Amino acid sequence: MVAGRAERLAFAGLQTARVAFYGAHYLAARLIARANFSDIEKPKHKMPSLASMLGAMTALFAQDWKNVEVGLYPAPLNILKEARRATASINYLADIPRVVKRQKRHGHSEAMARGEGKPRYYRQNFHYQTDGYLSDRSARIYDFQVEALFAGTADAMRRRAYVPVAKYLEGRDAAKTTLLDIGAGTGRFLSFVKSVQPELKVTALDLSAPYLARAKRALRDASDVDFVEAAAEKMPLPDASVNISVSIYLFHELPPKIRIAAAKEIARVLKPGGIFILADTIQYGDVPGFDGLLDIFPSLLHEPYYATFAKTDLDKLFGGAGLKRVDSDIAYLTKITIFEKPSACPKKRG
Image (tube, rainbow, N blue to C red; front, side, top):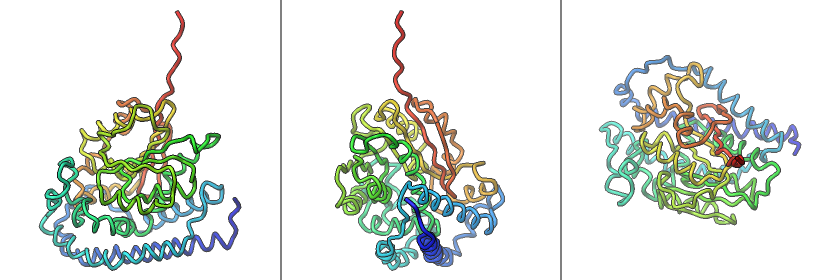
């Protein structure tokens, strides 16, 4: 695949437009919620400058384009799809006052009345969003909320999680390879994966029925897709049944004990030689000058388990489950860490 100058310029123009569009929505949310910022604890670390954040954004998109140039995936230039996604703007803006009121009164338990039978840690209003993860309304605007929060960079950060998938598939038959997306949400990442690797067998696993319903719609034209409504710590999947497992922005929303259980489950379902790709928030010390952001994020938006995750030793967490870290990558505010399940060693003869 050789990308031309015109395509590169179109890519740059689209990403600039996305940052401006979603960034404006983020600023609108900040403006409406400005009275609440006096309640946020002062960060222990220095906040990054605007210049450093814009520089990191630029580096994110530069690497994204390099991945296109080397043929890892096509240039994301579907203007029609972007326009359809942008229509969620009205619902997003309409929901901001509700989120702000909830934030003001620290109202993060409204979702407890929903999701009967779901784990207690899950039944809360993460991000102070309406209904938590437990309604069709929430599922409809979630992707827009995430893009606004990250000022139009969320999709580019997610795409970096596909890079180790592509590397794993080199020399392998995609039709005989299985990928599990743990906490698949609305299917945003899997839709991208299937657009690049249509023969890959994938499973979308999530605790939210409304979010899985959105994922089914997003993947309705794809083949070899299974949908499983279950928790990461209790996956109803056979031992050693998955080649690749992926988790994107899930682990920072799990309590510490649940993270341990989920890590063990991931190791259990992986085949020997299989890989697990964790794409989640950067942690303390990962990006010089960005630690102040990690200080304020838990109180800015309801993220009760974020602070402990930001300090978690990932090698210890997944090493305790039998997985070994083999690589890592920083994509702006996201860290992609790749773990491998060692292949079974043949027994030595006596």
